[in-house]
Image (tube, rainbow, N blue to C red; front, side, top):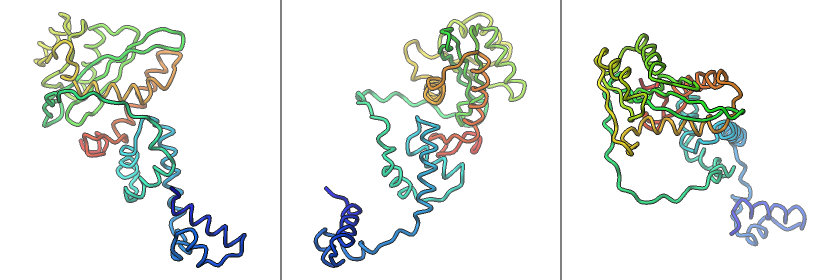
Length: 271
């Protein structure tokens, strides 16, 4: 099926090369004369939208249309209509970048309770990756569940309980202590040092059930964002490079990256 824009181009070519009249060309190719004579008035602005979309999808290859539009609307302050932006998004074939996977129908898990204020519930977890020379490193991630604010990303070859406690102490110094910390049953979190530290600060530890990561869904979703945003996209040579990139990305995540749970705004825009 030939699009109207393509039929318009063929009609214009027939008028220019065959000497046909505009009326006959429009009848032959099935378009109206008003369509033939129409001149777009927002070409320059459409080009600007296309330029923004291409830059965003090149830099943030895991972003779909929703995050791109919310970034342009909420962070950059553009007031372009979402239908217009989506039309340009599709014209650039950006909607075909990722082939969706078939998803199995599963029972919907019980949703986590949404905290009502800051420092009510923190979620913590580890991630793993490796450097360019094959050495494995770990990331210790901490978020505040209230507005999904990222609090810390600590990189290290080994992150025992003492290192975890040190990172949490540094957070408590400038932010205050949480009422609850949600985590899995990893050896660092069930150790005597960690449980005694929580008892000292009167922090309740909520352990999820083994084999049920959905019970810690907020930090698991945060880990997935880290994985697809930069961990799997970059190959680092040193641990210092990992920590430097993680610190800069965490600032971007909290200040500029749109989040669906926050109505398309970044965590600190609604905190």
